[in-house]
Length: 365
Image 1 (spheres, rainbow, N blue to C red):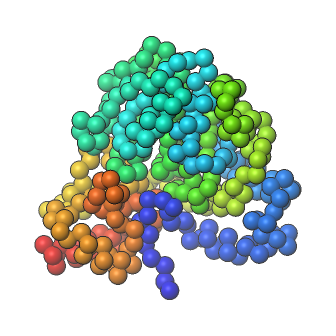
Image 2: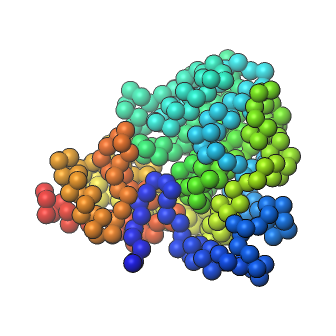
């Protein structure tokens, strides 16, 4: 069976080159006589794999020396609790910017551990945009400001990097959930106190969570924070306090090496801009489909769209599946369609989608 064009929001498509290498090494990793899934996480083979993965990620994102990279478990949803348990310290309030379903879920979870101030929200627009920083109303002494810089469900991406120094609050750490666009573009890590993301969109298989945290934010965990989720404990033990998701780290490492071969994040970002432009330009020119997000805040990774005649939704999904275009159904909370076009999606896949959409509209319009 030939491979399909997989537009899943996550777990998502992986680069075919990475999958082939993993298949070749499944039974015998580099002459060790065993596969990575069978290795001790403390053995020399796997510790070398983990160290290389961390070094490559640090290089790709130009992570400063005073930041630690942690390989954790629990996904981004668990981080919604782990973050306040680690960062509140002696503070009382955490500020949240709510731009969609995921940041709303994050602030709701944080209320179990802290008082939450909604510094800004785009709910009035139907979460179709990102509030400008001039509209953010921070509390007097927040432990941090939480952002979700790409909303996977709604298809909203920050068109700017949050820099609180611009509004006179540079002392407050910015936390960013970058699950669905990390490694899709260059970022200035130093603008953030903590960056995190589940791996299953742009990095690797589900089960691994990447946390990049500034060293001065370590050691603030609440007494009841589980030791396996205490950032300082994890950092002090090189992400080996408990058995990490070893195979997911291995695949992530292969993806990091693939990204470097592709030319690094500058080249990848240019490719992602071209893919997104191809799809958005088609949608904007169509009277059959529509995208409802503020054009200034459209995600390059997750493109929601709607058929103007939604009675045709099931036919669209059935015919697209038959054409080898899968996982296009929008999230149940939003409806419509969604094409997730992460790093591993080549421009040929986006072109195949546009060609199908054009043909479907011609036949059904």
